[in-house]
Image 1 (spheres, helix red, strand yellow):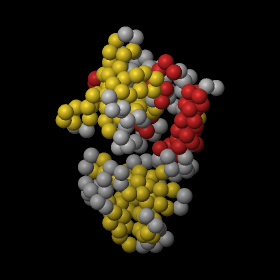
Image 2: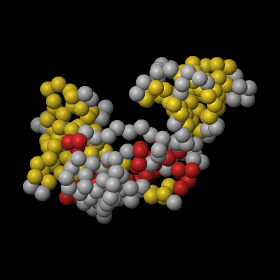
Image 3: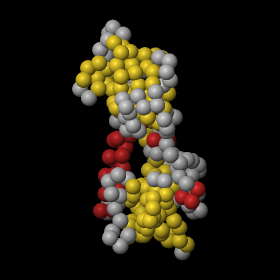
Image 4: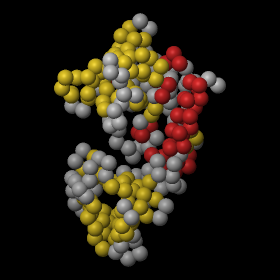
Length: 247
């Protein structure tokens, strides 16, 4: 294998290991949207209610949760305020995320024996090809447009294309896109790509071999953003991850 193929394979191995983890996206068993009426769920201890920014859980005798090393036992406990990242509660070998989604609080349990994880058979990929590592140029917006910070321009088959980009919180760029493979060989809604930080002159590399699926490709219990219309490429990007396989 070439150095390029070795690096791609290492990326794929790390990605697959994370997907198969006992607390990953495939381990999710439900997404519970909390209301002001306490409700019990089969996959997480307690009776849960919530507001736009917080959750309340009442635990009966014999029930317990752990939050950041702190044991919550019998009684009523307030969790919050929560943001999109939220807080994680642990119980036995399972966990649940308590987080904000568009002004509502959710509880999303993850179990290592979830049916989705048990039936997952892997994510096929297109063979890595250096030709899909495309040079591009990033131009920042003078004023951010919503959460988008700029655009990446690149050329494919003699035509110029543009993709709106967001900050990936680590200095690089995060891009959501669709293309002519979407709904055919790749997940219909979109794929994502993380791009290394632009050089001082704006130069970037779009390595589409590392285009990968959003969580929504693996579970119905994820809330994923969609790309803007201008991030639909008119040609097939036959690189990166394809539709996941389940038995």
